[in-house]
Length: 270
Length: 362
Image (cartoon, rainbow over all chains, first blue to last red; front, side, top):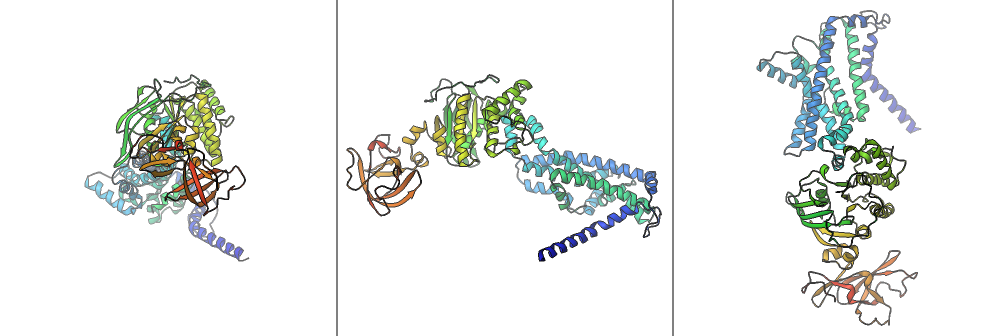
């Protein structure tokens, strides 16, 4: 009887924690369907009119486009640099390898404000005007980390003798990579890319310091909330950001058995 | 060179007795390899004949696996020459050498089916799909895995994986097949089964096998010839009978089987436990036998045999093994009992390091 009571208590407690975590998010999703532009309880009525209004708002459209562009570019760069770094650290034994590995992971653990300020100072000092490219550079610094972590973890879990076996059977280095290494790490690469994009798509702090006059979607939300304008549109945009962020994270979790996501969060950002 | 595609099945050869083949399948000349300060292989010379089942036996750290990796091309020697079928391959990468390896951890590709694993070598070499499928099927039959070609490696048992690893190597018909403790991960029963199986397959295909193991019984039962290694060196090369009956050094004598090392009149010699007779009270030793007396110290019943530890009156301890032909110890050789031991001088062998050296009999 006591065991059952304890179990019930734990279940109730877990439900409370989940509610605490997700209630505000659910509320926003709910308000996105509010027919009135005043947030009151209960809502005046259910409507999708704000979706149409938001979709036709040129500012939101520009912000969305910029976010997608910056996110995809940063992800592509992170894929290239992050996997190369992972291969290097995995394959080569050199003095200070652990330290180099730590340096690769550091940008995710560093507070965003430090990365942002440092980049901002660097761009100013070199007379580089802030643009989409400065945003991409900022995002790439932490996107590299998730790709690097995912690929490196997979490489370490892959039997070293597999590549040797391929070469033993007549495959040269490139063929062994294509036939054996690549298929075995592919899901980790894809998961890393998904997480990188999700990180980039909702990033605010580093973006604040590296964006010029243009707004990414999170920056637009931030501005709109601060000035208290167009709150119904904000609810719609936030709902959209939640969706775009959660879907890749869920896919990544599936691809890596949950480890990849844990590694992303371990960095402390997001 | 073995031609790819030419089936060598049923090429039954007699076991090779001597190393002196015209053109050995594998020849090593003063091969050395060190890792930093550690000398893993310390100048090895070796010739393995075509079609031979050759075993490298040694304790862990003796350099046998390094030697195998040098032959496969995963490591480059610091010094020396490696020849395969008369061709110098010392500086060739593994993918250009006519060797294939059965790895200790099998190293099966987890993302490929059993058939794809076995056919990988042929695919890389550009063998057409049709004849590839045929050869894969034949290899599957040879290792008795017909019908499992579509499975993934993780759907197989340990013994089955071992067979796939073997088939994947053998299907390429290499000049030399290298096996790195392939049975190490299997349980005793399966291991003994696979020992016979491996021997059968080797006879069937006639490919030269170089087999690495630390298991002396495995080496004795399977090999045409074997090399005993320690500290990066080969101590003795020869057929199992010769290595067991006439070990060249104290290390070999101690590593293979149980050896009793005694010193009499300044000569160190070895006598195997099964060659020592224990005489029942009052029994006269046959003419020509050397006798010594002692006390039974310990009796260990091992099923087929009983092992007695006898303390000789002259000081040393001797292990004596008796077959349990009758139900129990017939003469009641219990601990503390006085016994007479006898052995024929021709069953002993003098160790090389003895003062007057050589292999003379005592």
